Amino acid sequence: MNSSIGPTGHDGVRVLLVIVSAAVAVVGSFIGSGALVGTPIAQVADGALAADATAVAPGGPAFSIWTLIYSGFLAYAIWQALPAHRADVRQRQVGWWYAAAMVLNAVWITCVQFEQLWLSVLVIIALLAVLVVVFGVLTTEGPSGRVEAVVVDGSAYIYLGWVCVAVVANIAATLAAAGIDPFGLGPDTWAVLVLALVAVVAGLLAVAGHGRFTVTAAIVWGLVWIVVARTSGDGLDSRPAAIAAAVAAAVAIAATAIARSPRSHSPH
Image 1 (spheres, rainbow, N blue to C red):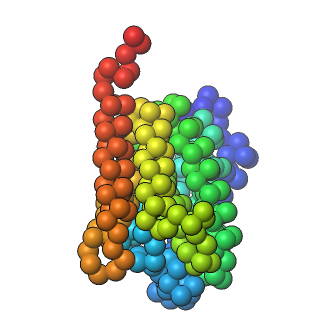
Image 2: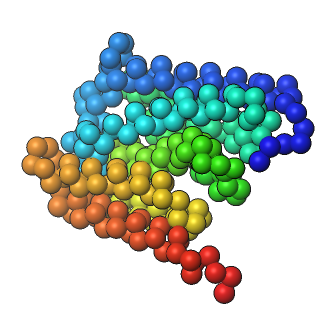
């Protein structure tokens, strides 16, 4: 939906901020990968965030989803800067939040590079909160066309879905690195509990978003790779965590299917 009012100075600032934020996020990704500078995330803090560090850590290939997420950042930055979209009411509502979400990703990488795991937990929780706001804005009023649905909504939903899994993995890794086992329940019990929480969150997002499949796909992607990592025999094996992750994925898919069904949209 386009505004009846032409682009303003605030629109220009927002557009520029989104572009800069996308660039910062992409630069941060190179630092996090260790390709040019920095340390690969999986090797930071003696491997605290490695794929076999905790029972809820996704397998290494799961992180390839970041290629899709970063591509989404760049596509969104270009799309929203086009003259036809600068004064779009929907972009005026979501652009600032989306920029914050991209910057927070770079901040998280910075915290991890300096081995500030507890600070990284606060940052990723803030990131999740911002992405929930983005989700709320985008689902309140749908996109105007297929390109917007893919570039704006799709990229944000994939980002949100992945972070829903990443936040529990981040918290678990931080606690494990500090040698903390709250209530002495053990890693397997905690894995089951937090993965049950992921299932609940996935269900709530499915209901709130009327079955946005892209969010669920990203959540399921992360959960499936937890199953693979816990059953492959190449790292930390945990049957309880694997079963819990598989059940959580099934719940997420079922909740989305129900939310998308015609009956769920019926006024009666």
